[in-house]
Length: 283
Image (tube, rainbow, N blue to C red; front, side, top):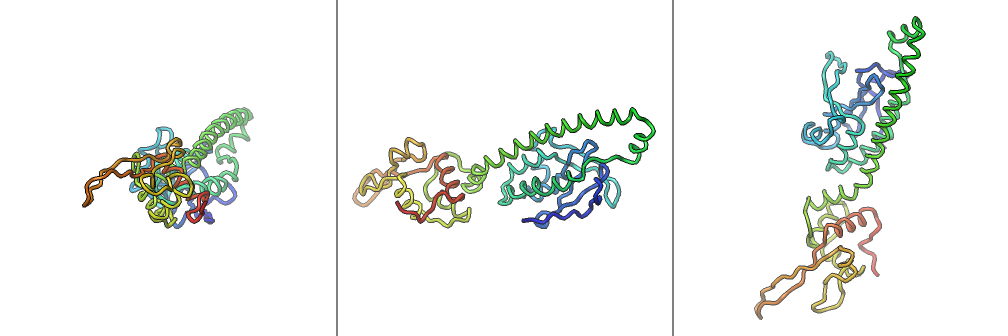
């Protein structure tokens, strides 16, 4: 587990709007700033670096307008304007990231960074505290404003939670996109074996063919039916057969080559990477 280090925190009191809190993820500095309405914003350059984007602009152009913006923040060198993204923007950036630790980064943000910021609660600036003491109506206006802000934050958090769930649900597709090098359509069995190897599951073409035959994806019968997709696999849409002409010394003959469909690739990569499938399992 990553330890969260608040390098520039405000103690037990939430820092005023514009003051940076600095966290660290796997040696990468991640800075946040809290808006007057209590919304946590993340410095875009830091998130891009943590998620492996070449440039922050490569990441922010993927985001909706309400997920990105600029914010004036206090730094040791004076006030600076920085590009920032919202919490839901972070989840969208995770969804588009190709690095292995993207999902782990999202869990770190939701499990450590945001709770560390939110446990400070609300705060009053010195000016607001003075106004509260001298103007009773100010408290009413403040309470009304706080209620509206909390409702807005709850709605934003609900959207962020829904997006986080989408990130989890799309994880197999994200793994597949990385592993099969963005190939579209059907691929050879060897390409899937290479994809599994890239995902940390050493797999040869021979091993995967053996598994596919053992688990009913390909026919075991010797002869013309060898390695042909089974009716079950065809009906599922996992595999299809492509006819090739093979030239030999004795003449030309037809050969059926199995190709794994996009759906089949997803099932295989997800099954093996999650441990549901075992290459060494024989039926």
